[in-house]
Structures are given as structure tokens and as C-alpha cells.
Amino acid sequence: KAGGARQRRLRAAARFAGRVRRVMVDRGDRVHRGQPVFTLETEYLALDLQRAEAELARARAANDETTRDLARKQALIAKHSIAQAAFDRSQSASQSAQAAVGAAVAARDLARQRLGDAVVTAPIDGDQEQ
Image (cartoon, rainbow, N blue to C red):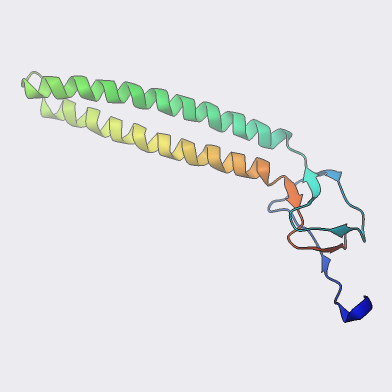
């Protein structure tokens, strides 16, 4: 380049393997950091996100049910109307349901991230190599 400036060449890479749906730049094109370079197919990723959202809804419903059950058992245990073991089982079920919600949130967030990562952007300003 003129003036002794060094030309930066870049290779954009996806974070995971997939089939390229669309290429937005040609070899040798000047690209800028953050500019979309190519996209991967997203059909399966979108289905993964739908599944994760459904699992989260299921986990939240189960958590709501175990929370209500635990509240009922707390009132009954205070009156000595149920055995401690029955209360302990409800408490464990409630804790397990809360953990399942946390896991489902993480799975949904991961599915969202993967879907977003299907658009591969230039990491730096430079000329596209491939």
C-alpha cells in the first residue's frame, strides 16, 4: 500500500460448524470490523431455540406447581398435620424445580447465542481473504 501502510488480510470464521447460507463479501473486498461477512443456515438453530423455550415454559410451570405445593405443606407442617418426610419431599421437589428453571434458562440463552452467531462478522478492518 502507498505510504508504507501494511495491508491487513482477514479470515472470518464461524464459532461452530455449519453450512454457509449466504456470503456477503467477495475475496479481496475491503471489510470493516463488525460487518457481516457470511451467514450460516439457521433452520436447526431456530428449532433448537423453540425447543429450549418450550422446555423453559415446562420448567417454569413445574416450578410454580412445586412452589404452591410447598406453601400448602408449610401450612400443614406448622399444624403438625403431615409428616416431616412429606414436607421434606416437597421442599426437595421445589428446589429441584428451581434448578430445572435455571438450566432451562441457560439452554435457551445458549440457543439464542448460537442463532446470533450464525451471522459471522469481520473481527477487524481488512481485506477479505476467503
